[in-house]
Image (cartoon, rainbow, N blue to C red):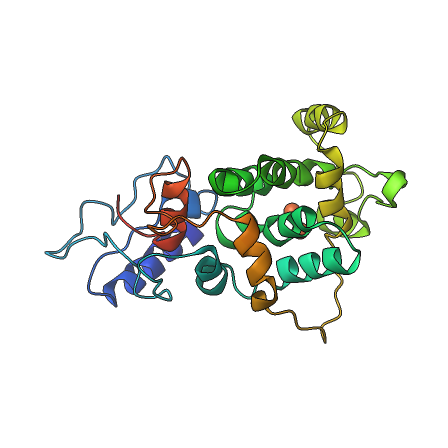
Length: 248
Ligand SMILES: [Fe+2]
Ligand SMILES: [Fe+2]
């Protein structure tokens, strides 16, 4: 009887064989299902005369040569309904453009990159291209989600009890981060992300990414070379989202 990890290897092998080149997933993609300290059967040893993929993954929508933030929304984060709905709510609530823009970007990491510590990854991704207050707020919203603030009517989310259990408590480093964020001059910007961060949406409301073209244009410094090819401190992260299965 094959173990789940052997089954996963076999599946990966089969999928890879349907392509012209060999595809090997990063350890992070499989860690947990597979013990990362155990040898991986198809890395390095079974190339069988074929080369490993070193560019775009043919199974993914191809991105333009100079991808913009809009392109990442379309080809990697779509449908991004949660982000669009949060930003729409921000607009409806009359918050200023910076807050609306922060709402639009607040969960790009869990939609398109890495879930755990998504606020931090998301902030790091956008940091070189946005106002410092926006990336600060995206980073902090992850922590603030766990702590109520009656001054703006924010309660601990009912949904978290369902998702994490009634006995879940944030780790000590999260409580410590909360203490620091609480006294920060941009606390309210991050807090307003959490106020607009709802998960129970009206499914009949459709929000178009294009509705935010101008807000993105005014608040995101799109690099001319394209996101990922611009040598910013987070360019490699955008490249990885664009081409997540390159061998190196
Ligand atoms: Fe979030
Ligand atoms: Fe969210």
